[in-house]
Image (cartoon, rainbow, N blue to C red; front, side):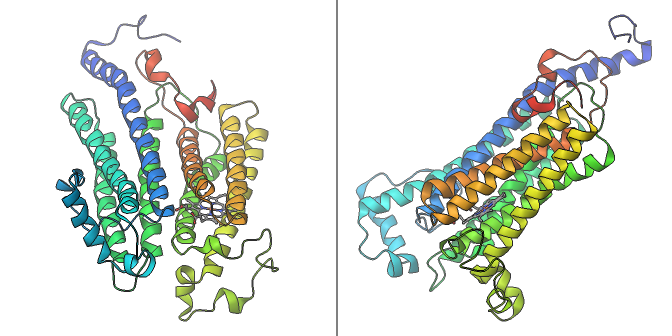
Length: 387
Ligand code: HEM
């Protein structure tokens, strides 16, 4: 095939060619930046999970996006913060008698989670501005990034609405639905970042056949749904009941009167721990089944291809995540298992998203691409040489 080195560009095309060469070169730092943001989001999810599992999430009773970056330093400032916490129902009902040193520990988790959020905001906006001013963000990528930036701002607000729900009279924890929304929005941002990053990988690849593309696209959607349901399990502490598997305290499928014990029926999906846990189990089986069928299909239709390798990787990760969920349930949610299950869900989501994006193929570039721009990061490495 003739390369751009051997065929001189038509005079009118030369300007465009220089611009598109610049864009190709720019793709690598942009991709590194997007994947760095993705790693920061996973770190936030991990610290957020630890904050929840250590019961620390309601220790800071105000939302001060700017001035809140400075933690209390003097003993006087600590006492003032502790006094505010003593006014919350969680302290009065669950933590009466807690000492200042224990309060400092729960405060540190929540403060660390919020600090990471601020860092994430900076690492998003400052390089975005630099890349934009240098003309390295094309219109399509720009819209995607603006959408993610808006979602990030919304996520901060959802976080505070969630915390505020836990400070209401009589509440000792945040509302499960709000926790699930907060976790699902974080996951959506993560999926968006890796989708954009994988889409910037240059070098031609054929799209996978239609059926494989569709099932590959369904996988991250189902993982997102499952993460939302997992957030409901975590938020309603449904992992502390029915700690048996594959049955739920003797029944493979609980009685309808148990699944829909609450009235009106719709509230069972959030408030009835039996249905909440049952739904999370069902979607897990569905997800694992889809991942396995997709992997078998990919291996048959495109043997020894990048698509088949990635599909097999996702199926393995989905099975591992299911096993981790079962261990978490059987052990009644120890900190390590709850955290591992939450963080590994993010890995499954990233892998499924990269796979869905790469399965759509990439156009052949009109210019010679640098080795850096075609380099595979992380899960993309399973892309191999062929689609
Ligand atoms: C295979 C796909 C699965 C995915 C993607 C997934 C994902 C998640 C996520 C994201 C959470 C929320 C974690 C948090 O907020 O701390 C969660 C919670 C949970 N999941 Fe799963 N899960 C899967 C399968 C399972 C299975 C098969 C079981 C058990 C039968 C299970 C049991 C649990 C339990 C007990 C919790 C609550 C943990 C806590 O309270 O921290 N999961 N899951």
